[in-house]
Image (cartoon, rainbow, N blue to C red; front, side, top):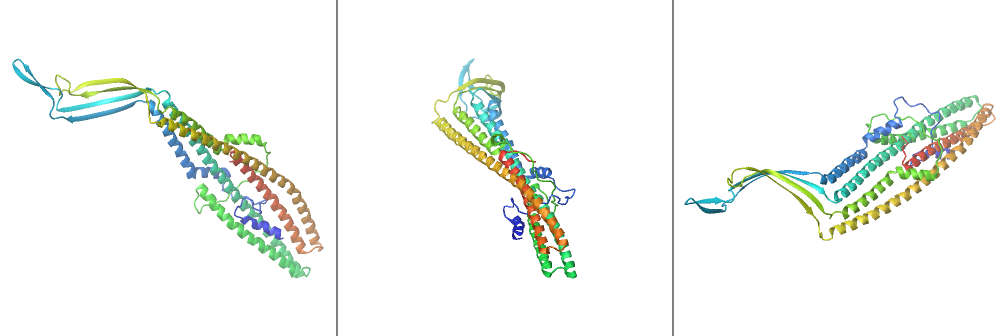
Length: 444
């Protein structure tokens, strides 16, 4: 009996992931408007601030890519100016016996022009920066997928906990109904003189213990429903009944295949490889930052100051090609390249560390799943034996061969076996979730 009560109290543990009380296979059917797992995950993804933040980061990364590419696009600028000059330079010339004054430029100077500049070729400098920006953009995309998976896993975990506690309450209600029937029979036998007060008190104690257990589990359910409401963005008063089941079927693939799949899907590893690729491209961008550039410039507009009438505005234009080659930049390029090389080495080491961690997590999740599956297989025989023992105990109790306490012990043995069976069903389902998380697979 003590072991049975400990199994019930284990549901109040802080971890709540390996609860001893478990659901009954014939639990009551949830309402038609209950929340399904797929719907819960969809609502959580729509409500998640982390997902929205990651989506905005993708937009920012795309903008940085466009900014890097803009160096290859024309730059057009309109400019207008006015300048007053006093005095101006003048020269006196004799003309037809008289002296006339000629100015080199007017007092009032007006100018309006449109200037266009186009980089014709920068020897791969812009291309290197653009490649690095593209890599950073891919990092943002992978980070958004990682945020979505994190929200999904958290929602599945909370959903399963609510599902377990709801069904746990259902099986406790069945226990209460059975004990109440036992109590009725014990009272009837006491009145008939075929039972003692000890039988009645033993049943009452067991019934009180189970009712207290229900209060504890119901309080725990309130907390997990609140957690699920927060994830899906539901109001505090919204009903949060769930429906669904735990998946316990399916074989386990070999570890090498699972690790290979994890390295293709785990957001952490993809982010680490993205960081490594970005660092590699940044090395090339730093190396080319002091490269030469060939630029075309064309400007056209209206200005005054042309003889013979210095104040008359005239159309004008100018164009040219410029080639620039930095000769010495104070070792800034070399220092930037050294920094980029160090970042690349760090990113490579980080990717290797993540790969090792993923391999370990896959191995551990696989071992846990196999262990849970084996336990689930062995407990089936225990349930069958406990059921046969209870049927025999009921027959013997009806014939007056055994006491009410012995019948209660037989019921407790079957309940404990059923608790263990459903606990292992839950453990298998949660082990599959852990393996899915380790391999980066979606389970919704």
